[in-house]
Length: 196
Image (cartoon, one colour):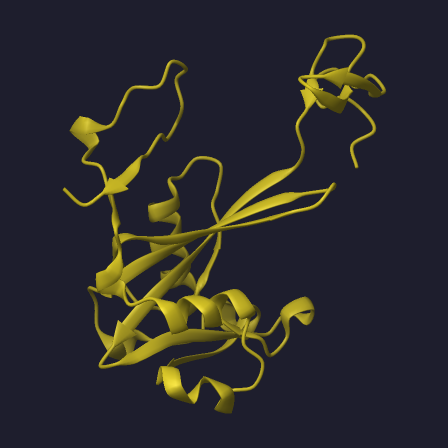
Protein backbone atom coordinates (compact mmCIF):
# COMPACT_ATOMS: atom_id res chain seq x y z
CA UNK A 1 0.00 0.00 0.00
CA UNK A 2 1.22 3.53 -0.78
CA UNK A 3 2.66 5.44 2.18
CA UNK A 4 3.96 8.56 0.46
CA UNK A 5 2.44 10.89 -2.13
CA UNK A 6 3.60 10.09 -5.66
CA UNK A 7 3.29 13.80 -6.54
CA UNK A 8 5.23 15.53 -3.72
CA UNK A 9 6.56 12.82 -1.37
CA UNK A 10 4.56 13.83 1.71
CA UNK A 11 3.30 11.05 3.99
CA UNK A 12 -0.31 10.16 3.09
CA UNK A 13 -3.17 10.30 5.59
CA UNK A 14 -6.55 8.58 5.62
CA UNK A 15 -9.42 10.98 5.00
CA UNK A 16 -13.10 10.68 4.12
CA UNK A 17 -13.05 11.78 0.47
CA UNK A 18 -15.54 11.08 -2.31
CA UNK A 19 -17.88 9.02 -0.16
CA UNK A 20 -15.31 6.74 1.49
CA UNK A 21 -12.00 6.67 3.34
CA UNK A 22 -9.09 7.17 0.98
CA UNK A 23 -5.40 7.95 1.25
CA UNK A 24 -4.89 11.67 0.63
CA UNK A 25 -1.85 13.91 0.63
CA UNK A 26 -2.31 16.65 3.26
CA UNK A 27 0.21 18.85 1.41
CA UNK A 28 -0.88 18.87 -2.25
CA UNK A 29 -4.33 17.22 -2.01
CA UNK A 30 -3.49 14.27 -4.30
CA UNK A 31 -5.97 11.40 -3.78
CA UNK A 32 -4.76 7.81 -4.15
CA UNK A 33 -7.38 5.78 -6.01
CA UNK A 34 -5.30 2.60 -6.09
CA UNK A 35 -2.83 0.77 -8.26
CA UNK A 36 -4.27 -0.17 -11.62
CA UNK A 37 -2.96 -2.30 -14.45
CA UNK A 38 -4.46 -3.28 -17.75
CA UNK A 39 -3.59 -6.54 -19.44
CA UNK A 40 -4.77 -8.18 -22.64
CA UNK A 41 -5.17 -11.66 -24.05
CA UNK A 42 -5.73 -12.87 -27.59
CA UNK A 43 -8.13 -15.63 -28.58
CA UNK A 44 -6.95 -17.06 -31.90
CA UNK A 45 -8.54 -20.12 -33.49
CA UNK A 46 -7.09 -21.86 -36.55
CA UNK A 47 -8.63 -24.99 -38.08
CA UNK A 48 -10.78 -25.49 -34.99
CA UNK A 49 -7.88 -25.29 -32.56
CA UNK A 50 -7.04 -22.49 -30.13
CA UNK A 51 -3.62 -20.91 -29.62
CA UNK A 52 -2.23 -21.29 -26.08
CA UNK A 53 1.14 -20.56 -24.50
CA UNK A 54 2.86 -22.30 -21.59
CA UNK A 55 4.77 -20.04 -19.21
CA UNK A 56 8.35 -20.58 -18.01
CA UNK A 57 8.58 -18.01 -15.22
CA UNK A 58 8.37 -19.20 -11.64
CA UNK A 59 5.06 -17.65 -10.48
CA UNK A 60 3.23 -19.09 -13.54
CA UNK A 61 5.60 -21.95 -14.37
CA UNK A 62 3.98 -24.58 -16.62
CA UNK A 63 0.63 -22.71 -16.67
CA UNK A 64 -1.15 -22.60 -20.04
CA UNK A 65 -2.94 -19.36 -20.93
CA UNK A 66 -3.98 -17.21 -23.84
CA UNK A 67 -1.03 -15.26 -25.24
CA UNK A 68 -0.96 -11.67 -24.02
CA UNK A 69 0.43 -9.35 -21.40
CA UNK A 70 0.38 -5.84 -19.98
CA UNK A 71 -0.57 -2.72 -21.90
CA UNK A 72 2.17 -0.07 -21.91
CA UNK A 73 1.19 3.45 -20.84
CA UNK A 74 1.57 4.81 -24.38
CA UNK A 75 -0.36 2.16 -26.34
CA UNK A 76 -3.95 1.17 -26.99
CA UNK A 77 -5.12 -2.25 -25.73
CA UNK A 78 -5.72 -3.60 -29.26
CA UNK A 79 -2.19 -2.63 -30.29
CA UNK A 80 -0.83 -4.21 -27.11
CA UNK A 81 -2.44 -7.59 -27.76
CA UNK A 82 -1.02 -7.74 -31.31
CA UNK A 83 2.44 -6.84 -29.94
CA UNK A 84 2.24 -9.33 -27.06
CA UNK A 85 1.04 -12.20 -29.29
CA UNK A 86 3.92 -11.53 -31.69
CA UNK A 87 6.43 -11.40 -28.81
CA UNK A 88 5.16 -14.60 -27.18
CA UNK A 89 4.37 -16.72 -30.24
CA UNK A 90 6.09 -15.20 -33.29
CA UNK A 91 2.70 -14.98 -35.03
CA UNK A 92 1.39 -11.92 -36.83
CA UNK A 93 -2.26 -11.24 -36.09
CA UNK A 94 -4.89 -8.54 -36.25
CA UNK A 95 -7.73 -7.72 -33.88
CA UNK A 96 -11.23 -8.71 -35.03
CA UNK A 97 -13.01 -7.29 -31.97
CA UNK A 98 -13.36 -7.29 -28.22
CA UNK A 99 -14.78 -10.49 -26.71
CA UNK A 100 -14.82 -9.74 -23.03
CA UNK A 101 -13.53 -7.97 -19.98
CA UNK A 102 -12.46 -9.35 -16.59
CA UNK A 103 -11.73 -7.33 -13.46
CA UNK A 104 -9.82 -8.48 -10.39
CA UNK A 105 -9.44 -6.26 -7.35
CA UNK A 106 -8.43 -6.18 -3.74
CA UNK A 107 -7.26 -3.39 -1.41
CA UNK A 108 -3.79 -3.37 -2.96
CA UNK A 109 -4.39 -3.57 -6.68
CA UNK A 110 -6.96 -3.51 -9.46
CA UNK A 111 -6.29 -5.44 -12.64
CA UNK A 112 -8.44 -5.30 -15.75
CA UNK A 113 -8.03 -7.91 -18.49
CA UNK A 114 -9.44 -7.46 -22.00
CA UNK A 115 -9.74 -10.49 -24.28
CA UNK A 116 -9.62 -9.78 -27.98
CA UNK A 117 -10.68 -11.95 -30.86
CA UNK A 118 -7.78 -12.32 -33.32
CA UNK A 119 -7.18 -13.58 -36.81
CA UNK A 120 -3.91 -14.77 -38.29
CA UNK A 121 -2.29 -12.43 -40.84
CA UNK A 122 1.12 -14.10 -41.13
CA UNK A 123 2.48 -17.59 -41.63
CA UNK A 124 2.04 -20.46 -39.19
CA UNK A 125 5.64 -21.58 -39.66
CA UNK A 126 6.72 -18.35 -37.89
CA UNK A 127 5.32 -19.77 -34.63
CA UNK A 128 7.90 -20.19 -31.86
CA UNK A 129 8.07 -19.53 -28.10
CA UNK A 130 8.95 -15.89 -27.46
CA UNK A 131 11.55 -14.41 -25.19
CA UNK A 132 14.15 -17.12 -25.89
CA UNK A 133 12.28 -19.51 -23.61
CA UNK A 134 12.58 -17.12 -20.64
CA UNK A 135 8.90 -16.20 -20.50
CA UNK A 136 7.20 -18.77 -22.75
CA UNK A 137 8.37 -22.39 -23.01
CA UNK A 138 5.77 -23.74 -25.45
CA UNK A 139 3.30 -22.43 -28.03
CA UNK A 140 0.63 -24.76 -29.34
CA UNK A 141 -2.71 -24.90 -31.12
CA UNK A 142 -5.01 -27.17 -29.12
CA UNK A 143 -8.47 -28.65 -29.73
CA UNK A 144 -10.80 -27.13 -27.11
CA UNK A 145 -12.09 -30.58 -26.12
CA UNK A 146 -8.53 -31.70 -25.30
CA UNK A 147 -7.58 -28.90 -22.88
CA UNK A 148 -7.39 -31.29 -19.92
CA UNK A 149 -4.55 -33.21 -21.58
CA UNK A 150 -2.26 -30.16 -21.36
CA UNK A 151 -1.99 -29.86 -17.58
CA UNK A 152 -2.83 -26.70 -15.64
CA UNK A 153 -4.75 -24.06 -17.60
CA UNK A 154 -5.48 -20.58 -16.29
CA UNK A 155 -9.17 -20.47 -15.28
CA UNK A 156 -9.89 -17.22 -17.15
CA UNK A 157 -8.22 -18.53 -20.32
CA UNK A 158 -10.22 -21.77 -20.06
CA UNK A 159 -13.46 -19.83 -19.58
CA UNK A 160 -12.93 -17.75 -22.72
CA UNK A 161 -11.91 -20.80 -24.79
CA UNK A 162 -15.03 -22.68 -23.67
CA UNK A 163 -17.46 -19.78 -24.15
CA UNK A 164 -16.33 -17.78 -27.18
CA UNK A 165 -15.20 -18.02 -30.76
CA UNK A 166 -13.52 -15.13 -32.59
CA UNK A 167 -16.51 -14.55 -34.88
CA UNK A 168 -18.62 -13.83 -31.78
CA UNK A 169 -16.82 -10.54 -31.06
CA UNK A 170 -19.57 -8.00 -30.53
CA UNK A 171 -17.51 -4.91 -29.82
CA UNK A 172 -15.48 -3.49 -32.68
CA UNK A 173 -12.97 -0.64 -32.69
CA UNK A 174 -14.68 2.58 -33.66
CA UNK A 175 -12.86 4.06 -36.71
CA UNK A 176 -10.33 6.74 -35.80
CA UNK A 177 -12.33 9.48 -37.55
CA UNK A 178 -15.35 8.65 -35.34
CA UNK A 179 -13.49 8.42 -32.02
CA UNK A 180 -14.56 11.17 -29.61
CA UNK A 181 -11.94 13.73 -28.67
CA UNK A 182 -11.34 13.60 -24.90
CA UNK A 183 -11.40 16.80 -22.85
CA UNK A 184 -7.80 16.19 -21.83
CA UNK A 185 -5.09 15.30 -24.32
CA UNK A 186 -4.08 11.62 -24.09
CA UNK A 187 -1.56 9.61 -26.07
CA UNK A 188 -4.27 7.05 -26.81
CA UNK A 189 -8.02 7.12 -26.46
CA UNK A 190 -9.94 4.22 -27.98
CA UNK A 191 -13.59 3.18 -27.87
CA UNK A 192 -14.90 -0.25 -28.82
CA UNK A 193 -18.60 -0.31 -29.64
CA UNK A 194 -21.29 -2.73 -30.82
CA UNK A 195 -21.43 -3.90 -34.40
CA UNK A 196 -23.33 -1.49 -36.60
